Length: 158
Image (tube, rainbow, N blue to C red):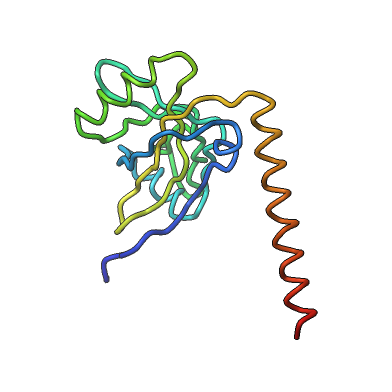
């Protein structure tokens, strides 16, 4: 069987980009069981409530929902169990030190397969205030209106 190559996206966390200012991103490996990998290969996962915490000098991903594998037996996994992240020591220390500052947290942005291995993109993030969210939505709406106006102008010129 040929080895997989490239990046295959399983799940992304669009809500995180709306709720937080993303300051720094890091790619991390995941410690998973066999049925979790099979469930991910079917494209089933949710990162919406996910976050990372530190226990005993290690970083763990919590709140990520990977549903049970449908053909699994008694060896099936728990859907919301704590999963260990695989990072270098200096990366863990840097993220934990910054996350301990007020208002900062570590959130998952994307879950994907890279060259056949499950990876998660985590980000150091700071929560947005309500007025920041409104401003972001307003900017996005203004950008869309400008693009529509430009495309309409180009169509009229033809």
